[in-house]
Image (cartoon, rainbow, N blue to C red):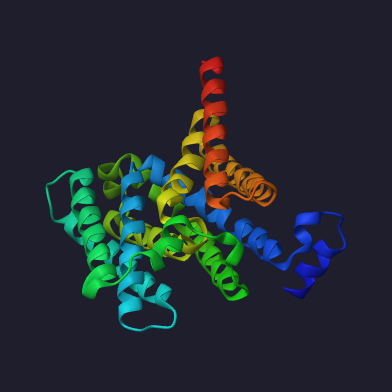
Length: 279
């Protein structure tokens, strides 16, 4: 971290002379590829509501961890979100219900359980507001290190499973006929989303987290001509919106997560117009 701090201290950029801004920028540079890569499969697999449901389950895990007196309730959130993702995959594989119906069941249950856990015994909900809005400016070096490890794991997972995941999302029957373990691939992907969502919730906030998992891929899909462009553009859009949002947040005093989300919305609008013009 000292090298990272020294690098920006040597440059004439006012906002990066503060250590908390340097931490926030590094966290964004790690989160953007995570959101960009996962977004492509979330959009392709029509799982945008599922990522939102995972955010709700992460909040529930945080509330349960706080009730149990854990010093770092985020770890309870990780465990709960992964269990939530595994349970969803299990039920989905053994049910004839539509995926959006099952997502609605799990999402509403997670929200209800989270609110119950947060308010049981007359507890105050206000102490959980930071998880609803998020504050990337308070990210710690330890959290940055964890994000780096998760990014490395996701990149390794992507190198091994990206083609299988794409085929599974587009045509699961064809994927199964090619010998691809559809259930295992979907389960690993849902677990990856669960971990990323949980570790990001305190930085970007539950209320807008889903937009960061949907808009990069949706924007890239508007203009990408092939699968490689789709992935690269999704990551690039997430990076551009992240850096722009952090800059706007510093100079305007607004929420960084909201500024990033609005930046992604603007990118989607531009790419949609380019798509229409190209068509």
